[in-house]
Image 1 (cartoon, helix red, strand yellow):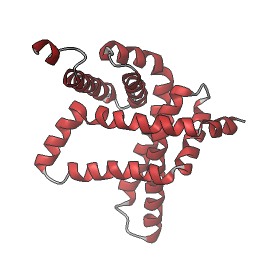
Image 2: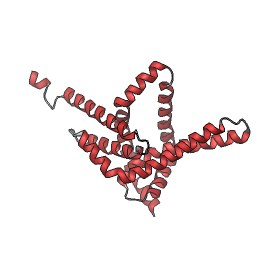
Image 3: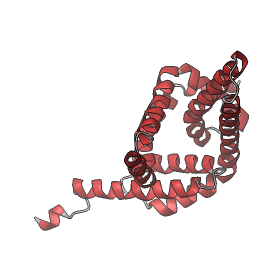
Length: 215
């Protein structure tokens, strides 16, 4: 009985092993994101390891993640740098324009907000595509933007989920402290684990559209 409970093939043991893998992966992801400009490398590496976790029952997370970081360092750096630059530019402009109250300022803030949302939504597709496509970075951005528009309800839902989490995070001091702890420990990898399944099905479905865009 004891051997059966602690067997490697036991469901509870496999569940605990997967939770531990997600905890390890989440911490590695957060640490990789800390320099900010490496966020693209972190996202690609996280997605790649999560994809392996979906396909393989047992995986050595630490060496798998380090290998993914090394493999995706160049492409992930430039894609992430572009994303961070646009997001920071929009946030800075919105902050500056918020100090001026007129119709022009309001219009510019709406434009910056729209660009910010489109950038974040496009990034949902950009990094998974980067792992599958040998295209140039510009072509990848075009394909990711095309998929964002083609699946706008899903894209809007994903950014809506992030918005709700952000609101909950700042709803109180307790929620902020608890939320930041969970973000550091498991939230990114756990959400990514679900996200990978959805994204892979979507990319398989629209793969032929990506090929047509390339032409």
